[in-house]
Structure formats: structure tokens, C-alpha cells
Length: 376
Image 1 (spheres, rainbow, N blue to C red):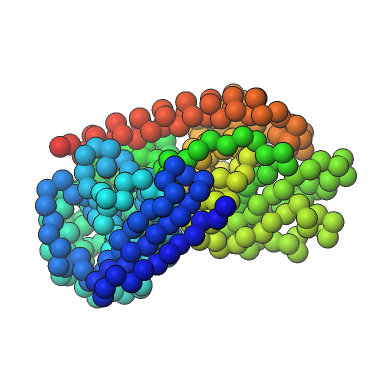
Image 2: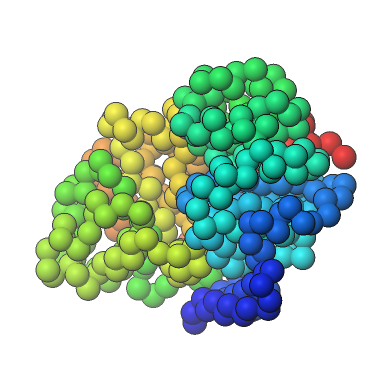
């Protein structure tokens, strides 16, 4: 049961990528990829949205934003780095999207003046990541002078660096429920199939800098000593938590897969039972994940309906409670891990059902907020 990507060279103008994924409702998905320069040769009709992601990250958000616009009756053109293509490996509406791939952001910067004349032909343009240090690029693309451009902020501090005037126009979007900006949370990865709980409980967690992993490892040692059967998948761009951080006798319980492709990430999450969101509200950096930014793992929780293990200090911000999550505090993380392992499949599926209720509410909120500006 693997996610396999087949790349066929059709001609010099585009690639056809076939994604085969047995964990999703569609076994094979055909995705046409055009090179960046083909954007200058296409016909742009009405009811088309352009999504621009100039970075080599945040591609996990692109399918979710695309799905929202498609639900509202639009087709979607997408400009993104080649590394983000397989974030669409389980996308169900490939006939509604066109992907234009670049290899280096310099391609966009070099053609920004000509590209600006293309951009203005779209109904709306969504800048998927608005960074403080790329404002000159946005100016050259003409995004700041258009009345149909939308800016997504993954860190709301950047809103105050010249974007406040877009707030009352509903053109500032955020992933979380912050005082400024509309909450539009992209968490669609494909039409997933809910799975039963594994016989050997499997946890998923991302490796992130500035976390107290020693405390985490001590809890795992205790689980091992008490002869619990479990596995923990670790992914993430950061190598902060790796095999050197655990004792030898725990190596069979940990699977480290740093810097995986999106298709492999999706498969790993789908294979897991729980997602551990290991952030501490008492830590200066941990507090940021409910004041200025959103945990990337929460997107996976909503999209794959995997119950999270999360500190009680974050539950309100992420719309979670003890009916849809396993909540720990400063002193009982081990007990919650133990509870997750011992939970039977019937109770596990109930938690998933409750989590699905929250996901639908977040989806509705996101759609309603999009409609405040995107009106057909």
C-alpha cells in the first residue's frame, strides 16, 4: 500500500503526473503540470482564481484553498514551486485546476512586470503566504494596487507591516481565529477514508526546534517499561528531534522520516491513529501558536480526522475539547499517552465522529468568510 507517482513526459509544454493512492477514494489521479512560462500563453476566462505560492513551503495549504474556490464555482490556476506538486496527489477535482510550476523564485522575479499584466485578468488572486521580506516582489507583481488581491498571513505580526488598509476590505486572511483578519482554514488533502484504530497504536508528531523533547522521551521510556505496544512516526523539516535523542532500546518504537514528500506525509498521517501536538503554553515560543500563528499539525488533525493529543492551554483556540481530543496538562502527559493506547476502537471512532463535527464547523466558517469578498 504505497503512494506511487508516475511521471509521463507528454510534450515540451507539460507533464502528466499519475498519483496512485490506495488510502483515498480515487485510486489514480491524473495531474497536468505546465511550466511557469506557459502562464503567458493561456486564455484566462471568467470565474478563475489565481493562487500564488512563491515559497518552497506551505504547499499543504494549496489543495485546501483550491477546494474552497471550486466549491464556490470557480476554476483555479496555481503558481507554485515544483516541490509542491505532489501536495495534490489525492485531490479529487483535478479537472478544475491548472498548475504552473517554477524551479526557482528568480523566474517569477525576472518576469514580474510582464506577469503583473497577466495577474490582473483573474477574478481574484490569492497570495498564499505573505512574508515581510518579499514585499518588493508583491509590489512588482502589482498585488498591492489591485482591488481583487487577497493576502494570507501565517504570522499575523506581518499584517502591521503595511497591510492594515486591507483589513476592512476582507482581504487579509489567517489560518486561525485571530482579532485581525478573516479565518479561512485550508485543511483538505483528499477524500479520505476513516480507518479503524491499529492494533499497535501509532502516533504522528513533527520535529520542531525549541521543544522539550527530553520530557517526551522520559514518558516513552515509561511506556516501554510498562510493555505497551506503540509506534511514533516523526517527520518535519527540522532535525531537532532525531534518533540520537532516544535510547537504543526505543529505536523499534520510533520511525524517523524527516523532510518527506507530501504524498509520503499524507500516507504516514493516514497510517497513524493520533497526532501529538507537543507545544507548551508556558513556553515563550509555544505561546506563539495561539497568539500569532497556527500549528501546522492542526491542519492534519482537521483534514485526516486524527484525534490530537494536545495541551489544555491550546484547546479553546483550536476548537477542541475532551470529546474530540485527548487533552493533557503539565503533569499527566504519560497518562494521556497510556489512555490513547488502551482506547478501544468503538470509543476511538466516537472521538473521530466528534472531531468531524468541528471540522465541518470550521469548513463552514471558512466558506462564509470567503463569501465576504469572493462573490459571483
